[in-house]
Image 1 (cartoon, rainbow, N blue to C red):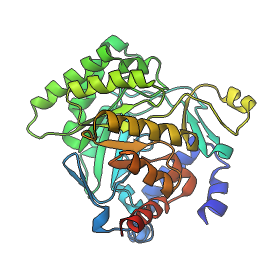
Image 2 (cartoon, helix red, strand yellow):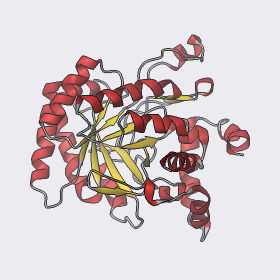
Image 3 (cartoon, helix red, strand yellow):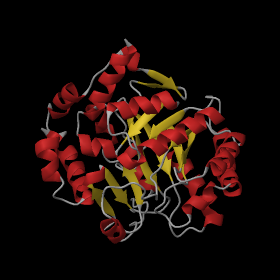
Image 4 (tube, rainbow, N blue to C red):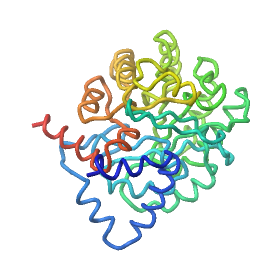
Length: 345
């Protein structure tokens, strides 16, 4: 029903308008007594064999919702109703910012993909902090942090540390996002020197906290293996707890959508089916490079339950979806978890 009726209607709107509409529907719909409970009964499958103890946290299943949807921590508490065991809010920056000019999100239906250049649009870390103070439901929440666009790279550690301090007490783990292609020069922070400066600040701050929260690094799929080696080595040197692989890609290889359309869209990070193979390759590379000692959250191009299983087989401990959820609908997580239960028997 979703793919044949609901999705075609929704896809008449731009991706950003759909996002706003879905957020509004969740807020209003789940405010009606019983709607949230009914939704959860339809979309959720639970079983002890789906549980995962990773990063010192108990996940009810390995499937989470990636950062980028709930940028301002406004609907994170409702996503366990769609079967997710965790959700990542953000990317959050110290100051509110509008992001890049619109239009900045584009749908490639033939490729089952999206291109976005949102540019860390969000209401700022204090807004997210306020929303996270009212956590009620049993869903694990990660905080994805970044720098403001106008902050030069040599001052980036200050932005990351600021967000880290403000979110630390309100999330279960934190993610350092230095790999988004939609913020000018952000990915330069992945080199050894810049990365080391950021991680040193965060680790020192964590050492002064009573409660230990895991810190993960989100990796770009566009790094060469030589660059990956440097990034992984530096992250491990400074005590990173795990990796998220991968962010969106700037690659436009092997797309069905015509070159004219792609050129007209312009810059942005590509997500969805075209990213499936590359993100899996990066997961496998990190897993082998760290000899499986650092947990990996696999994300990028998970469009089917088979894609999810492939990520886990490549070395991911957990997975996240986003574009696949948009294309497949609210039963997508249930389908993944049922497939995982089938192979666990």
